[in-house]
Length: 71
Image (cartoon, rainbow, N blue to C red; front, side):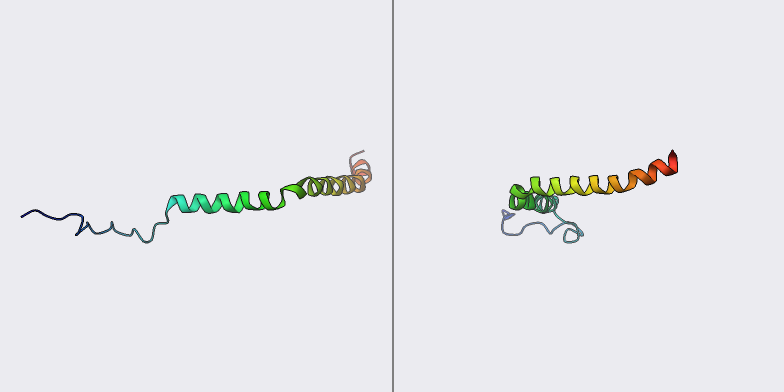
């Protein structure tokens, strides 16, 4: 008698429920990285300039200390 493999499929491999699917992990990582870029893309230039201004301010405060310490 012919066996109906499509009616009685093989059992799943051991511990298959414990292993996460690789595609889902990559898709979630892409969503986490690209989502904010799409949402806040028009504001990134302003935020970058703000960070540069903060860096310049901190650098201007530390230059005299650096010159005194190293100079």
